[in-house]
Amino acid sequence: MSSITFFEGERHTFFRPLHSSRRELVVACLRALYERLHGPAADYAHNLTRETLKELLLPVVREHLEAVEADGEPDEFNGAESRDPQQLTSLLMRVLLRDGWLEQFPDRQGLVTAFRFSRPGVLFAEVFWSLNRPSQSRQRNMRSCRNSLDAALAERGDAHDLVDAYEYAVQVNRDLSEGIDYFQELLRRLMREATLHSQWDEFVEFLERFRRNYSKQLTADNATLNREAIRQKLERLRSEVPGPKRQRMEEQLHDIAQWAVREHTGGSVYDWLLDRIDDVVNAACESKQPGFIKAMDSYLKRVAGLVQQSMMLRSGQNRHAWLAAIQKLSALELPRQERLLAAIGERLSFVELRLLDPSSFRLRSAVQRRKAVTVSIQPRPSREARLEAAMKRAETEAFAVANEELADKLREDLKLFRHPIRLSSLPVGSARELLQVMQAVEAVRNARGRDLVARPLPGRLDNEYFSGADYEIDLKK
Image (cartoon, rainbow, N blue to C red; front, side, top):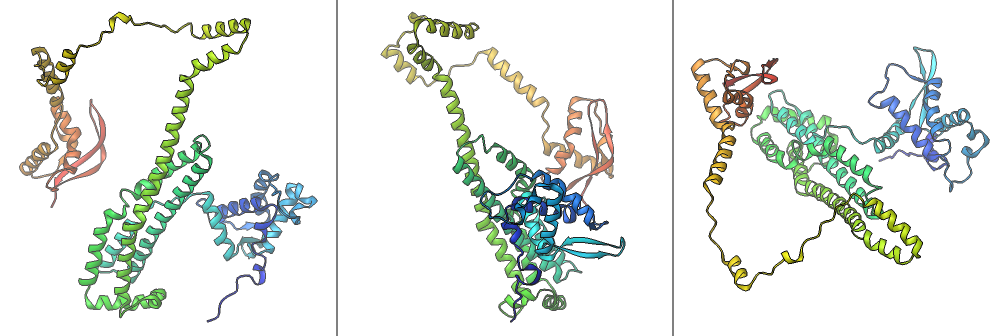
């Protein structure tokens, strides 16, 4: 089997710009180019001409003009033209084009020469862009795996749905591994610097990343929560799929998944792929997810320890301020002592000190200590205390409506009226009725029988007490 050589032709010196004295500038320019050509705000309607390419790279060059590696050997970026931003930008364009990162192609619409990434150039530039900008995906690969299996079970499901489910399951492990590496890197930095001040920005970034990605991985996209549902769907695919559909999916897998045909063991690629999905999901639940939670827990414990240590040091400094002042006074001469005491007195002038009378402290006798220890009968509350407790309990229960009680009332009304009930049509004549309206949707969603449904309506519910979305409540058909 012949193999393709990477370092040949225009890729002979592909990585040379990354070893130059301006390697940080090269990486920054590759990030800017990828953002312009393939990022979220990429302009696909217009090609990148020489002028637009120069206008794109010039601000990046000016920002990194002084960033020169001290340990770099003399190269083309150390010449006289590297001090001028315009000339350095032109040089950088030539280097990226010469070493295979960029390529030229004719723009037939504008009748000019345009620039784009070469195939290996766009792959490596995406790595630099991704490192600088964390993934913005919604991290719902486990749910996507479950949904793809649902699609495969449907009447029109095919082998593409199975391959999608497998790829989503693999991506789950990749997401969790990325999270583990991320927390381990944060922990290494904390252990190396051992100070919270320099790591506070990274902790804030972690909180934002947790809100955006990790909270979903631990809740809706949790591997453990979706594991049983995926197992049931895999079992249905093994036992309930008719023979003709199974044969059709087997033939499709031989066409679209050559890698599975080469790797599978046994008689059927279909069964092997279902087993692989099951194994990958089990690995995510039993290995990757616990490791992810453990890595995050270790990082949070370390941050909490540094916070506690910082607070203790600060409180210790305040506690020992008097000792430091006394030591400083003992080392000064009398005139300087007077000036220091006067300065301390001015700062303490607003402090009010009160001393306790020593005669108010009396030691308990042995008989009193024994009585205090052996008393086991609780004192009987007075009538006023019982009345106050009863009033507080009544005030609390007056504005509490049980969800199940409210759900029962809604069932009775729906059976009586035999049509859906709009939230805006419910009465609000008393405080209890107002609370029932405000709590109706929650009661429907938490109903024990799961026989009620609340559908949002386009209109809004506005009255003199509150404003919110209107709902239609009905019995499930």
